[in-house]
Structures are given as C-alpha cells and as structure tokens.
Length: 139
Image 1 (cartoon, rainbow, N blue to C red):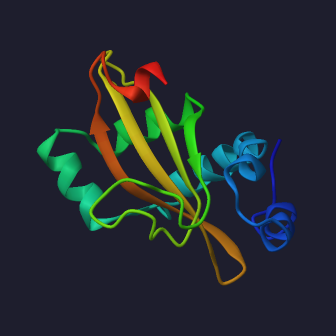
Image 2 (cartoon, one colour):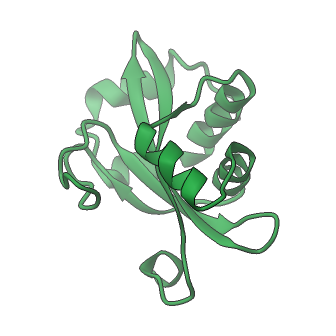
C-alpha cells in the first residue's frame, strides 16, 4: 500500500498521543514511505548513528536492507525511549528494527519518525551489532 506523505498518517499523528501501540499498525505504510525516502536520499542519519556505523563497519545500504526486511521489535512513543546518553528525551516516536544483514550479521537500527513541514521524515538514531544474547534478538 502506498501512502501520500501528507495524508492519513499525519491525521493520525495529530490525533494520536504517539504511544507505541498507535504506530505499530502503521509500520507497513511507514516502511514503504521510508524506502521512498531512501531512494530520494531524504533519510537523516544522526551524528551519533554516523559515528557508530563507521566504528562498526555498517554502511547505509546495510541499514536500509535491515529496516526494509524486518518489523520493529520495540516501539517507543514520545519521551519513552529509555536508551542512549539522555534517556526519555526523544521528541519523536522511535522504532527499533532488528534483523540480519546480507552477510548474516545481526543489526539493530533505531529509526525516529518525525513530522516536519507537514510531511513525515525519518532519522536513523543509532545502529548496533547484536549478539545472540541480546534482548534485540530474544525479546
């Protein structure tokens, strides 16, 4: 299903309290829009994500591969994201997507969904490599 980035989700965005359950049902539409944003090079990579990706030898192609082929295992509404240097300060919903990259390495990508100028935008918050004991793989 294709969505117009100005239409149904923004109406929901305005109505919803941005709780995790409110957004779970919209992942299929969101990931479709996210793929189009990757195509147009509109996806924002935070400075933190960029540094972590370089440290872990993870490219943008890997991030896209993992996000487009998996569903979120964790979802956080505004001010619910408990991780990072400043927990519970996220101004936007965050989806945590875990899956294997092209070489079988398990990766978790945290994706923020933002509203900017009446359009949805996506920001990669962080990217990590997860081992077999990680909550990301066993949660």
